[in-house]
Amino acid sequence: MQTNFSPNQLADPHVAESEKILRKCVHCGFCTATCPTYVTLGNELDSPRGRIYLIKDMLENGRPADKEIVTHIDRCLSCLACMTTCPSGVNYMHLVDHARAHIQETYKRPLIDRLTRAMLAFVLPYPRRFRAALKLAKLGRPFIGLFERIQALKPLAAMLKLAPASIPAASPMASPGSHAGQGAKRGRVAILTGCAQSVLDPAINETTISLLTRLGIEVVVPPGEGCCGALVHHMGREEAALASARQNVDAWTRAIDQGGLDAIIITASGCGTTIKDYGFMLRLDPAYAAKAARVSALAKDITEYLAGIELPEPARKPGTVVAYHSACSMQHGQKITRQPKELLAKAGFIVREPREGHLCCGSAGTYNILQSEISARLRDRKVKNIEATGAAIVATGNIGCITQIASAASMPVVHTVKLLDWAYGGPRPEGVREESLVAAE
Ligand code: SF4
Ligand code: SF4
Image 1 (cartoon, rainbow, N blue to C red):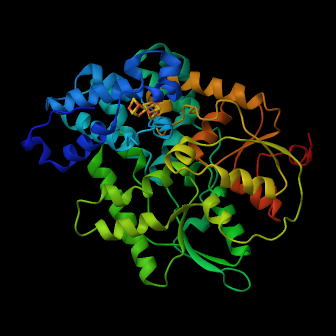
Image 2 (tube, protein in one colour):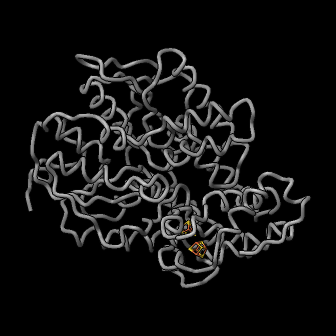
């Protein structure tokens, strides 16, 4: 694609990066076929190619964002299916991240939208605030029907619907410290405790620590780590995202300096995509660029890490049919496709892949709150495809997808690591009945 930026504009490194990306696009439109919003809405402006044109026009003319571009960029899930499909290697992720930051800087949203976004950015990345908000959500439940009838309050209704009926107790294993590996030491890793996942399902990291330590791997929870920054990054709040990235880079750099790390283990693939991008996000910061690149290189999804080490024979061979839902951040963001399925199969599960596996479930960070109608359509389509597999359980590697799919699916939805842990001698995952685990097809 031809571009027309002035030398002055190109002096801005963010614009220069976006110009490089834009020039790679050859307008072929292959990406439209796999874009969930184009497939759902059928509007070219809700396709990757349409959004690329809108972003190009906004950046080239150096103009503030307007209502039209905000509408179509807000509808983008950042699922990155377009990047998997694109034959020209267009880095849509970095382009849309730039567009979102530009929107945040130049566009004044309606008051209720600003308040909703400010509230999400204030609450979600902080486990204590999030926990308190979930408790308060119980009081708001009776008003869901009312909020749903008022367009501006739909995000509030979506939030209340997603809030779980009960909140698990905080995990003591998430506190800073070290969990020694059993037997001969095979490695040392740090684990991201994260934010929303640690409140909604602390058992995911507890299970991960238990499995890794049984395999002889020391697991460190470094003091000072927190939210990866993805939630605010996707809302265009660049400074807040970079502050989170710097805080985590500092925490993990101290852990590296104090005993070395083989990997930084991440159990939410949405966070993994962002942490693997820290090197890029902090490339312009001389104090952090090298450290951030080192952290990104060490970041590994739990399934990616387990696939790279030798595992014993499973303690049980379940024979259960499991539908594997590959989160967008796993398959498109991190290009991890084989490992989770191979690990499940090696552990004795019968793995089935739902049709249209490339399409997003509609969770996408805060998307199911801010774009609840499109999100619900994508969720229902996803659940229909999952249920058609006849599986007894759904396995996936991202808390957002777990919450989203579980809100409509008839079978339990669990993190992949919980099924692996169970097969390798751990306890039955909470919420999964014994019959579901042992029933063969
Ligand atoms: S990130 Fe997903 S929703 Fe956004 S343009 Fe690409 S395929 Fe479409
Ligand atoms: S597939 Fe790639 S090159 Fe083709 S229109 Fe989409 S982004 Fe551009």
